[in-house]
Each structure stands twice: as C-alpha cells, then as structure tokens.
Image (cartoon, rainbow, N blue to C red; front, side, top):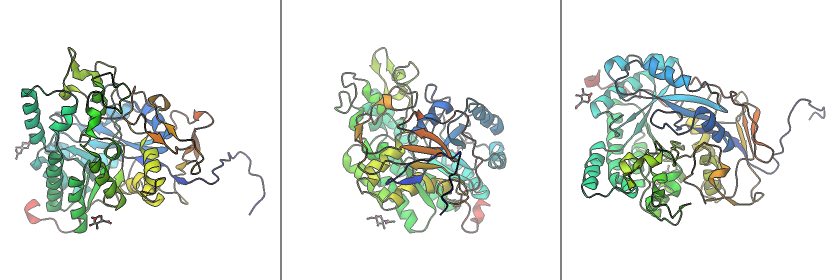
Length: 459
Ligand SMILES: *[C@@H]1O[C@H](CO)[C@@H](O)[C@H](O)[C@H]1NC(C)=O
Ligand SMILES: *[C@@H]1O[C@H](CO)[C@@H](O)[C@H](O)[C@H]1NC(C)=O
C-alpha cells in the first residue's frame, strides 16, 4: 500500500455504508409533447442524480402520421440541448409502424436507439395485433429490445363509455375503467404473440400479480419474457384516487386524487402490493423503473385539465406520476433496509439488469475495472434520522409527489457520475454541472434476438 499523498483527488468518506452502482432508470418521460408541463432534460436529470440515479433512458416519440423516423427522433435530440446532469439515452416509441417506417429501424439502431416501445392501448398510440406482429418480426431481426405497454384497449373503451353514461367521472373511476383483467389479458396475449414470433419482450410497468404470473409461467418454460414494475405498484393503492383520502397532502381538495392517476392504475388493496413484492423478491420481475411521467397539478394543461367547469373528468387528466428521484431510495429503504430483498437483488433490479437489457452493460450497471465510475453512496444503516418526504425536498419542477408523507430511513449521501461527484447531500446538494450528462449510444441487448429458426409462415 502506498502512503504517497495523491493530490488533486477528492476524498469521499463512505465508512460503514453501502456503495452501490448508480441507478439506471430505464423508464423516464421527459419533455414529451403529451406531457407539456412535465420535466425537461434539465430538471428531470437534476432530480435523477439527487436520488442516486446516474443514467436515464427517456423516449423519442413517433406521432401517428409522422413516417420519417429520423425527423421524429431529431426533434427529441433537440430537446436535450438545454443540457443534462446525468447520462441519458432514448427508446423509440412507435405508434404508426407502416412498412415504410419499419424499413428505417436499422438507422435507429445505428444511432444508438436499440430499444422500442409500443402500446396496446391509448387511442393516440395504440397498435393492433397485426401491427404488433410486424414490429416483433423486425425487433427479432435487428435484436432490438421490445417494450410493451399491455392493457386491453377495447375493455377500457367499453368501461369508459359505461362510466360516462352513469356520470361516474371522479378521478377514482380512472382505476375502475382499467381493471386488472385488462392488463392480465393483454399481458398474456403479447407473451403468446412473442412466443409465436420467437423474440424476447419486456412488459413495462406491470401492476399486479395476476399479470406477472403470466411472465413467471413463460419464464418457467424458458421463454425470454421480462417484466418491469414501478414504485407506485409497491406502495400506493387506488384509495389514493378517492376524494378526502387520509394520505393526501390536501385532503380538503376533492380533486387531489388526480395526482395519483397513472396507467396501469393503482390497484385496489394492499394484498395486491404484497403480490408485486413477492414477484420482486423471487426474481420474476427483471427491472425496477420509475415511469416518471409527471404533470404539474396547478396548471390548465396539467392535472387540472381534468377539472372542467368545476367538474372532474378523469378521462381528461394527464396520466402519470413523478418518481425519478424517489425510485432508488424507496427500494433501498423498504427493500434492503427492511430485509425484504438482498442488496444484490436491489442492485440487479435498479442497475445491472437494466444495463443488460438495454445494451449498456459494457460501461454501466456494475462497479468494476473498465466500467464508468457511476456510484451511489448511502448513509451507514441507522446513521440517518428517518424523515418524512415532502415535495419541497425534491429537485423536479413538479408541484407534488405521490410519495409525500412516506418515511425514509436512508437516502443517497453522494452520487458520482463517471467519477465526478454530482450530488453531495450534506454539502451543497446538487454539485454536478448541467451539460455533464452525455448521450448514451447504446449497443444491442445481451438478451435480444432469435432463439430458433423462424416459423416459415412468417418468413
Ligand atoms: C391493424 O391496423 C392497420 C393500420 O391501421 C390496418 O391496416 C390493419 O388492417 C389492422 N389489422 C387488423 C387485423 O384489423
Ligand atoms: C417464485 O414463486 C413462485 C410461487 O411461489 C414459484 O413457483 C417460482 O418458482 C418462484 N420463482 C423463483 C425464480 O424463485
């Protein structure tokens, strides 16, 4: 051991604490047209580093009718010109996969967008099963990671009409309009289609045990089917959507439930939350992401868009919650510190698995020689006074958080991105520089691509 003093080196005291790989949040919506007052690349990545996340993957969206993917994606690259505090990449969202559009996918792979997302629901983005088969064939050929939002569109549309007729339009009915059955059915269907085409899929933001059971059954047959879940499905129930809920920061505001609208929705009771925890514990869930998709509450185009002439209309409330900053601390406090999961499982879910699935594992997702020094350093267990979260503690530009009032027993003390200290909780907070974050040109997933010969019918 050398005793020579190394100069110019910042010494960080991590004595007694866990040092984990920086979080990779692979599901973050920033500056999208459909979230006109969400977070920008500046505010979203600022929030990320303050919560121990060192890389995020955001979305570049192809609107229906835009058949020039290059143009659609350029438009999202322009939105990063404000600069970012941590590294970032893009998934492509395909909402109109015509044959002409699919021909442009190799170019997207060249640009480092090696994953794409499709929706089975939402009128603006929904693709049907035949389009999904077309896309799956391309992702198989190009080894693109395929992410699917799985909820049955027709069921939701049907229930929306029923609820509208009955004039049941409070925020709570958002959850009623998207029952578990809608996710259950669509999850099973997309798994079946991916098996037919012989290509891996990852079902995003899975919210209940019933649908994750389909993933587990597929995994038992050694099919490459992966699942993502998010903090909201571990901690919050649909009671939060009801007026006057005891957990609300402003229980006197009857529209407060709008803040908890996300899709898939929060589920009905705590036994559901336990079900998702079990799937986290036993390895079925592959990655843990935030699905950060916030909208300001007090804004005519934010959550308040759903309050028309003083009357609530859940169908007009922008969907989504903020969560890029709270994701890693929530799983650390309620998973690792409570003993529900091991620190190893925590690291897999928050860092290593997203790196593998999204073509980042050469430099990100673990601590090792040759890897980027993306590191999160915690307080030694019991050395931090537990505190209750308030929105003012967070670094997004949103006026609320769904996790307000929750107790945290730990929080990242330091966040390091590529060797640079960017978050120092006790000395200055955000100490990183805007513009330090780099675009991540991602490679192929370690897990994508075909397993066997293509079914001749599909050739
Ligand atoms: C799916 O949607 C596409 C594009 O709108 C349409 O051309 C196709 O006919 C639809 N497929 C089925 C089976 O309805
Ligand atoms: C997860 O739990 C289920 C049900 O208890 C069990 O069948 C399955 O084998 C477990 N999977 C893993 C990877 O432990």
